[in-house]
Image (tube, rainbow over all chains, first blue to last red; front, side):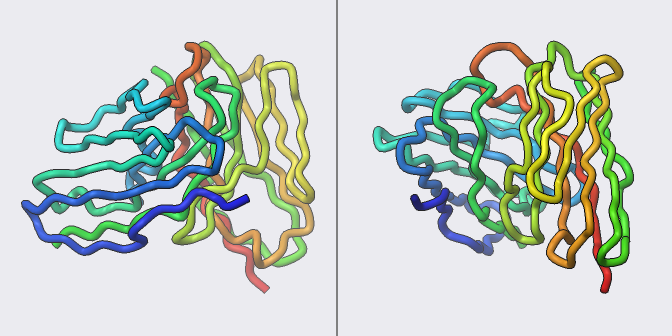
Length: 114
Length: 115
């Protein structure tokens, strides 16, 4: 069974631009969560999608948004990029929404904002 | 405040030695506690998940313990190998029903295993 895939793996953007990251969950998984990871803050929750609906959102500004498609694939978008948005963006999938389900992480997208 | 604190922040050990990583949490209500291993530049990989009623769980050379009374967990690595060099992240889930958004992450312990 293929794991969680994320594209692209690396991105370089400049301040003010926008970016879209993509995540394909494990086949059959319906929940996709997004995280931002930086050396200083560790992993921070962005949002979670289940059955095309955003179920929970972390404490990030409105510049960060996402969506989920009917095939469970998910995208996240960051508009008006800032230097502080440079980070590893991870997506994780799980079978269902319940908090006892194991999450499987993708390899991440490394975003650098210049 | 719901928090997960890990110690030490970093650790260097010699290959073949054992080590123990600590995780203290103040998350409530508690649902489960997870340990992840994250190699540099890659996504985290789950090692163990423990619920309230479990106090020990093993995965090969990795053994996690949980004391729900003192709200402490440890991850013990036996006979370390060079491939154990990674960050180890402790994650506690709040039991509020159904949303992965209630995972509280520790900042991790960076383990370096030297030959």
